[in-house]
Image 1 (cartoon, rainbow, N blue to C red):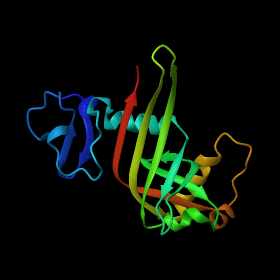
Image 2 (tube, helix red, strand yellow; image 1 turned 30 degrees about the vertical axis):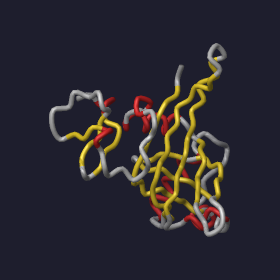
Image 3 (cartoon, helix red, strand yellow; image 1 turned 60 degrees about the horizontal axis):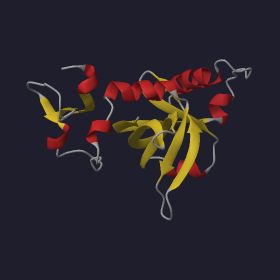
Length: 181
């Protein structure tokens, strides 16, 4: 089995593309019954779990979707990846904090241009599903803040630990697909 064949990794097992030559210990996508989201109509467009992380690392911006009592709320946010975790920063107050300790979705889209010959927009997309948590560990907050300001002219100061909230998605599930013609 090739790493590109693995599309999900769960405690229940590894889910692979239907055409994978996996001998044992794998569940084919079409046979999987425990996925937490609806299966996609075109499973041949699924990208591997490893490729999902490559896209997450390549991009720095996505849309965080929060479900509230009224309407779902989507907000564009930049993120950083540190030690296999996805982090965001925000102010001490604001609408996105209503998503704390609730299920959220973070969607990233990699624009690959328009194919004018057939009239379609080529792209890769990755959806990260999980619980939005506030990071309270000061050493993790500092590491995240240092990475956030890396390459900018903004200097770090310890007061940022009190004035900035750092949020993390406790990841339950990642799904990626590509639409390329």
